[in-house]
Image (cartoon, rainbow, N blue to C red; front, side, top):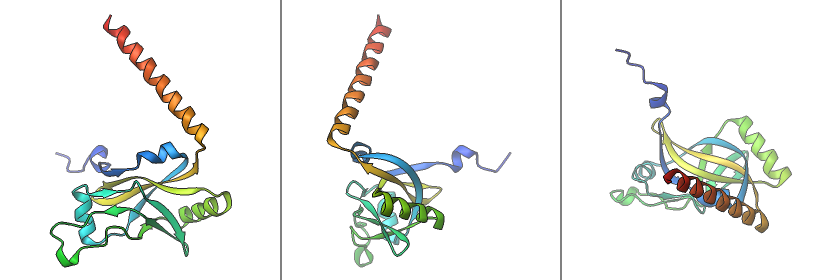
Length: 162
């Protein structure tokens, strides 16, 4: 029997938190996967699914990327070793990826937004996106398009029942 795990087993993702407002408020231009520097009690809280990235954003500081505004609920059994719920967390990326981010954020005025927080092969990762803010009319157009797609799908289901 082959002891090597299959590709599907190696690429397993266990999602912890998502940011549904990101695609509503921003045009997503590019995405990256970044590791996160965490303490032990933060990892335990994340494994139990107690985190929120809805208010989160990424900031470039001294050639490094930090995730701000992410809330990780303190671990119940953590007592005095517990972490601060909302603190700045360093993201782990390759130098060239960081340089591309610096160029896009500083020259083109774009924003870094966390899309999803998950575990991949036992390590905490965050999907980070480069986004441009949507105007109000863009948001309305997206809502109209989604409603139209939903209506088409509903009609197609009704025809299938006849």
